Image 1 (cartoon, helix red, strand yellow):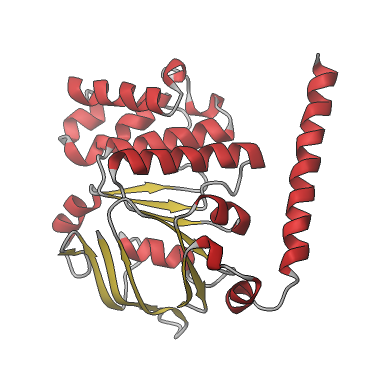
Image 2 (spheres, one colour):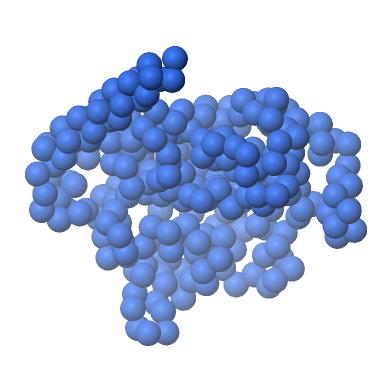
Length: 273
């Protein structure tokens, strides 16, 4: 379980990115984090694992307060938090397998990681994870030879290699087409359900969040302005989060764009044949 208690972040410039954010994410829950640019979504995720230092509040992961830990203790606790990035954050020149094994760096001595000599059980686990995300046959390929969707799957497998107790996912579908986005979201949901993992997903695609998230939290100017199930994310709620907009027209536009993209792919496939 993850508990955020009055989490705040104010920069030296005086700008407040987060203000008294209090949330509880129980085991197995997938929480979608939405809001306009600058609302504090990425800052919130990075404050949890202290890539950004909070200026106030607590971050409790299974009763351990991550705020205030020293460097050594923080390194140990970060092993419990899997991070999945928008831009994949893979080492392009390394193989898929080597990228997945990098998720074990916090568990092995430096000499093993430097020489890339991981224990047999870690290698076995990595193969199993690649099989789970549908990339077993790509284990020996370089990361830069993969498609965007495949790279994101490698990122998921790498995060799972940590054997985490929490997943933090930062805009996992921002660089992907609609079909691949849904495949990645479906995979994340299935894996979290299988492992009982809580997850926070920073996602800018509101219809995608409504389709896949169990719970949605809306941020605006660093404050929680919505917290509830997807079916309560009404036009009024969206206006509270994002400001005035014709949300029904926007949803229709998203559907039309997805249909047009699907039609374009079908036309391209016909030309290739």
